[in-house]
Length: 277
Image (cartoon, rainbow, N blue to C red):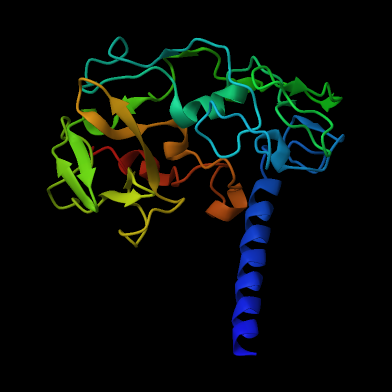
């Protein structure tokens, strides 16, 4: 009886967590069904998650969980040393998690271009191009307005760039090295505990801690993604689209903050989480 009671509590907790996550994305423009609040919606399916994720037949060429979209075919121009002489670290080609965001936000691919369409076995992509359902959309079937970043990213925050100009790595829960650019939160100084690292699933991960708990990486921290900056420090933290943006979070779940921000923009807190100014 006691074991059954514990299992019931676990199942109840999982159900509550699942419902909370669904409630978040439901109230964002990433809900592309007819119940979504954004300008681009369609009524052919009530499956909210399917436009990005699938439990089977996902795209293995994108480092995003069970990704249900084809790769973008766009070649990007990123913010680099041509835009600012203060960039100290290496800038890589667009890759990692940022390609997942840009598979919609480069404005070239329809939002219903999927590997595995809604319905059991009704539309599985060939592993390269995906399947467009040609739904009837309220609004455009591609991202429009400021959310359409295009291929020229030189007027957007740099991505694929070494955090703090490089110079830091991690072992276990210890951040090693020194930031090449002292104008960032890094090891040493009064805020040395803000830049955190841990080994999770045999991969060294990094984040800038914003919340109260330094030891746990959470969705309200600045998430840094580990990439190999060959010839310039090796594996280390990289700034990507999802460092600042959580694609599942509504404004209501961030205290009225605009959609998808990990940290509030009030008082430029999201900027000052990393930049020492």
